Image: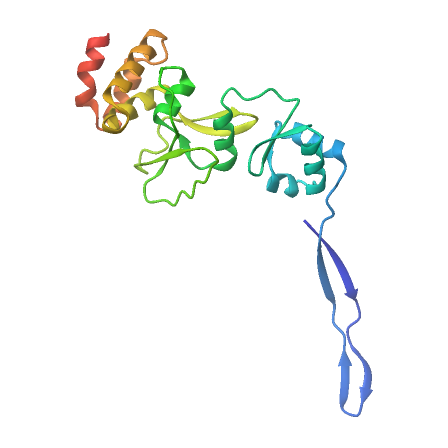
Length: 234
């Protein structure tokens, strides 16, 4: 938003010198809307938006950076990463790294081992965040933690994609069934043992059904390598 200030509202010849005349036109000066430095207003903005905000979003909502830094220095908000803050009074996200992903890489989707971990169907501890982007797109993902980016087929990118809320922000993450099939598809990268363990845990914990797995296996063209393991685990 911007404020408009009229510097002149008169148009017409005001002075004549021989054949010369002076004409005045309307001039509009755009000034940025004033930002609030009130700390309570800034805190309310955080609460209204789920407790986590980026600096640029806070500015867009009318809060001055002076208020942001004052809240940070007083400990009333916590810096999660560069340009990302959370209310200190808000409960910490169960997956703080994914909260950063939700804020800094909203167009990427959590996949493979990171998605298995989120769904509670692996004992693996990923050394980096596994994110998927459509093949052929520019991802430009820059986070404060290690990231491994996978390029998925754009035609099936949105299949099985869910939106969860982490730290008050939306996060794209693949469903448990889609993730299991992706692990078989990328078994040469994540390891077949990882995919088999996840399949066993998912069935034990009743997170998936065979019909879901077969649907995605056909869609992603891994039905043949998966079928023996699905039959063995029934």
